[in-house]
Image 1 (cartoon, rainbow, N blue to C red):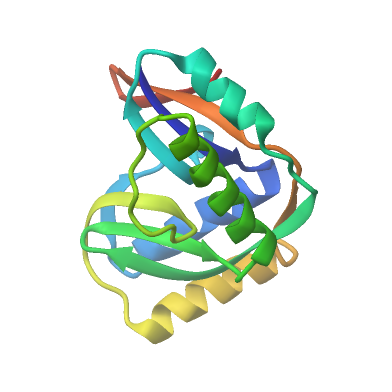
Image 2: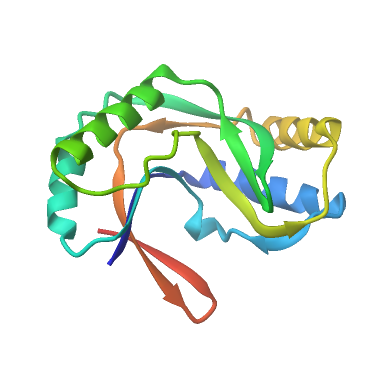
Amino acid sequence: MRLFIAIQLNDEMKDALLDIQDAMRTYGVRGKDTPAENMHLTLAFIGEYDDPERVKEVVDSIEIRPFEMKLKGIGAFRDLWWVGTENSAPLMAISRRLRRALAEAGIPFDKKKFSPHITVIRRANGTLSGEAADEIAANAITENGGVSMTVDHISLMRSDRGKYGMIYTEL
């Protein structure tokens, strides 16, 4: 079973991200858009693992004090475009506690440095200038009322390949 741990997004945040995808297309960026139902912020990618109950126990052990998460900025990792979040001590603390708990439980996970982002376009071609990216992000966030959401839980997710792309299911 292919697993990851994520923060699920509210509808307002997904709407703002869809607006950003639309705006990026007007600047010529093309690729595979992340559908709204798959938008999330990954805290830890586990990959293939056959004991989801064990992972769920770790997820449930992480105390979450509700905090606000706000969108900020657009960037790219090679051909993947993402939207970032404002610097957040609570978000970074959750990531550290979660990763420590996974390691203590002997559950393997991708140990790349945590860089909070939400993928909006994969296999992208086309570029944005820094000014265009800033303008798109500012407009989408402003039009959607200064997009933020309260994070009060994290989710263990399963990833399955479907006929039209990946299907993410909360466990």
